[in-house]
Amino acid sequence: MPVEPLSQKEIEDRLAGLPGWSLEGDRLTRSYRLGSHVAATAMVVHIAQVQEELDHHSDLTLGYDTVSLSVHTHSAGGAVTAKDLELARRVEDLAPAHGAH
Ligand SMILES: C[C@H](O)[C@H](O)[C@H]1CNC2=NC(N)=NC(=O)C2=N1
Image (cartoon, rainbow, N blue to C red; front, side, top):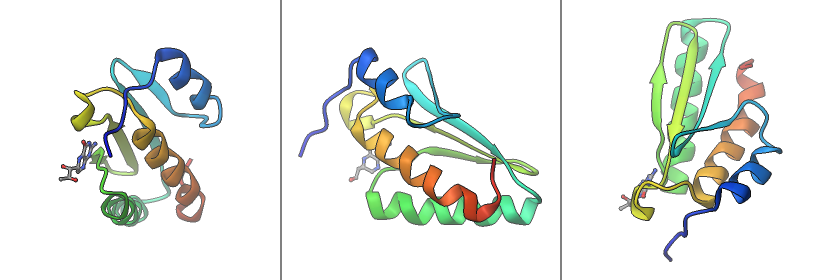
């Protein structure tokens, strides 16, 4: 099923329920801080599992104690779609278990 690009207004409305996430150019982004490098690495693995489940993948960056995501939808020409917001929601939901903020 094709995924349609969302309008700027739709994206902004939906981002109201995702504090910490923002629209940077044509991508949804968020960075998290964690308690250690191992904790950050575990969160990356958890996100990777969710991304495989959703068949939707961010550019996922591991730092010393940070995890950063940047996502848009390749198959929608690089626009932001509901798939990106679904991934953001799923990552928000798993973040507390990793002590990410
Ligand atoms: C074949 C596979 O379903 C596609 O390549 C998926 C995989 N992950 C993806 N991730 C993202 N961000 N955008 C896509 O269009 C996309 N497509």
